[in-house]
Amino acid sequence: MSTVADTLRLFRARIIAISADSEAGCRSMAEVTRPPIELFRDPEARWIRAISRYDPGEHEHLAALPAMFAIDEGGQVRYRYLSRNAGDRPSTALLLLAAESISGIPSGSDRS
Image (cartoon, rainbow, N blue to C red; front, side, top):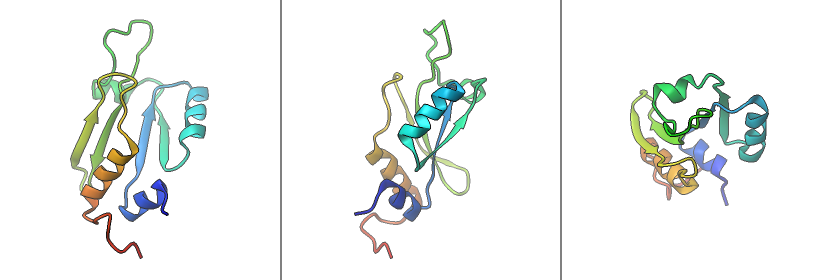
């Protein structure tokens, strides 16, 4: 039985998360997600602002709205998932399906 990390390697895919959380918050998230998710910290929320993925109704702090982009080797966005709220996140199955579709390698193929 292959793991999510094994499947992502097969598809030559990476999952990268960008968070505006505090350093302690990012450390805590990294402990939960572990690989295969690579976590990058964006304390000024430049990326979140650049793609307009925040809750405009939140006034006390910038609340990011999750988004997932599947980008091919040429840098083209081939799939995107834009969450409706902070709790709306893509499933693992959806992440793997996006990676599979970009790789061109069918999931049932010989994985040797």
